[in-house]
Image (tube, rainbow, N blue to C red; front, side):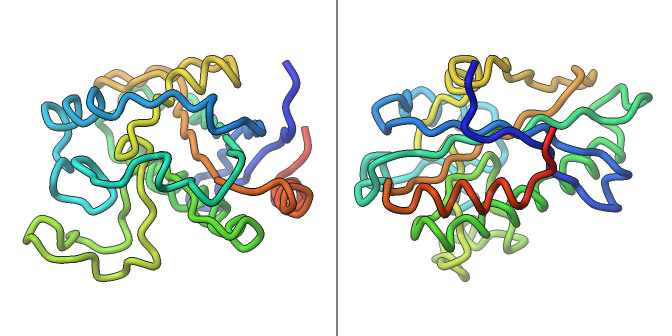
Length: 207
């Protein structure tokens, strides 16, 4: 399978030398599969962030509205394989790895926004403010920093991961299942493609 970008992202000292394998693909907006009602219902039943985080469901913004000024999507898969011995998703080391990964990926994606003129769509809920003011029915304190998560827009990341990266997403349910997957999307226009891809390649270690 051909990838537009392929490399490795260092997660820093806090990640104990752990790296993320990174794959990037340019896709059309029509190739993003949307199941907004399904994901909103799943989040309502199973996620503590439902209705309590401005980046999460229920959400009024649609994928088409969010990306209306852009012609294409840069889909990026980050695959993190922890060190040997990390066997359960319940221990602090796992949560630390997840937190470090999210922070490093967020930093990378925001750097690409300087070239795309868009706001990226995150793999996880926004954690800029803690607690989020949505739980009190208040507006976002930092709307310029807020990035919506894929679930809020109804994006089927499982479909994207398998179709474009041949990496099934493994959901962690207590016992650790081998790797973490983060799927992020960056809307862009073709005139900015070369700059965006060059910047991404610059940030990664080559395989």
